[in-house]
Length: 54
Image (cartoon, rainbow, N blue to C red; front, side, top):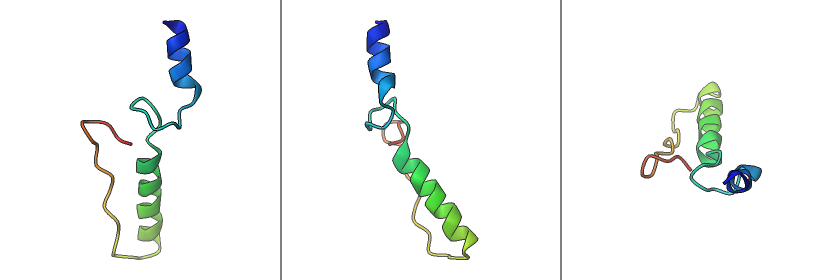
């Protein structure tokens, strides 16, 4: 079981349910930067799918 946990946590950027939600993080950064630039046409935030952000 410990090896299985190690395998899942070895690469947190594969896009699995337990990984870091890179798409969501990048979108939040994009929205924040556009707001700082004064833009009003902002992209929508990434919504979770079945309770999981991807």
